[in-house]
Image (cartoon, rainbow, N blue to C red; front, side, top):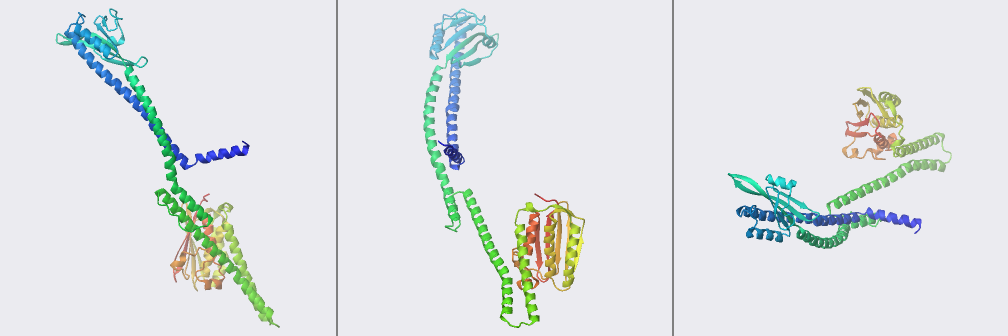
Length: 484
């Protein structure tokens, strides 16, 4: 296989590992395997422990009965009792074990194996048993349960240990049963794993079908075959995804409509001055011996239309620049009070010409990290609008304030005001509340769009409140420190 083939194979493996279907199947397989392991080892171990416990209790009960008989038949002194010997042999044979009777001299007086009879046994278990303890141990190497049980009798109304029964009981039958059950558990586990594998293949495929339908619907939308909403009611989570996609599509439609409207408006706004210029020029060309006064008047109108065209183009260029990333901001520490004063100086002639009073009120000294040029343009647009769209003998008041995080300035005027419906659209490009009045004063409908973009680039906010025939207030809030 060539290098390209290997790379493609590795990429396919990575894609498969990232598949939700594969991961669901893998989780189901791991859960099934985990359950099988619990069944095999947990249940088997529980069975083994329980079987040992039952075997131990049975033997202990038999030994306690035997201990009583040893005292009854005085077996520690005379081992010829056929009843006790029969019980010892029966116990030894029944449990495939060995029983030793030890007297208080630590001598073995009876061994069912006839190996240690007459010998002395001194061990920790025997000594502890003579102190009254019953001890049980399991020897997992030889599969034997070892028990030491004291033989007690009443002497002078006091219980005394006079001997010890040391018993070893085989656990081979328990181990054999466990092995049989373990083999059966393995077979059951294999069957379960096969079933789980089938489920792990089928269930994720069934679960993913609604996702596949949604993916197919999204691809159809992407290809432009349908504009219908995506409907997904199979799962709540999938329904949320479909709703989010439908909202995104609705938003994209609004943006597309806005783009088309913007293009239409741009075409209209650029075409109108050109049409006027063409009409004026054609009028001059079709007339002979045009008076100088009329010629100058027409040429003056042509110059005005060209200026208007130039202003629209400049505003559009400003808007395009503002649409770029905020990394182009030239952030520096700026004295906002001085910036306001310089803007007022520039706009004072326009205000006097319109008979408008300009008022600047600062609550405190403000220094902030901003792009001075762009912010100056935004503030100028707001104040200039307040001057242009005002009434005679009106006023425009700018109030500057700040707290520990933001500085705020309000631009209030005594102008014509904006109706509630228009307030929702005034920041849109080319939107004008009073188109006839805007055309008279040379408005392009881009000033507030430029202002809003500038404020947002500074991570700030701008709000408007207005009452028709009373005036308008624009409130701008900008962070003192620029937020990256």
